[in-house]
Image (tube, rainbow, N blue to C red):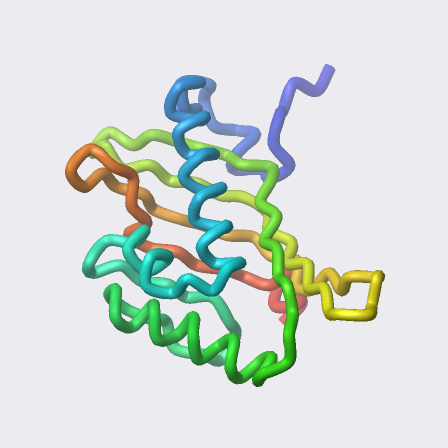
Length: 160
């Protein structure tokens, strides 16, 4: 009988003690929900403040990672301008299949799948693109979770 609960060999092989307790898991889910709402509303500065001051946000192929609050906020604004110009769109980031692992140093390593859904006025069918895997290192600052490093890998990159 296969008792693995994760799809990757490394996750399935990890001892059960590596998994987060339910309180931490729920806290991480809430953190990500709030972070996604800020990103979807293009609230660049509040989104950037969900990262550590020296945080790194690597989200698009061929684009250097954004660093620090100012760099992350700038990249969020510039990405939306590059991608959508002034066209009205509503984007939704859907995160699921969340794996949360607390580390001995107190950091939290996460891995999850993300779908980005884009809706345009007059077009009832949203576009789902890209499909990604996201790997984060979360840390605590003043008792609050913050993203220290985020690496987003689009599924299309997995074939390179």
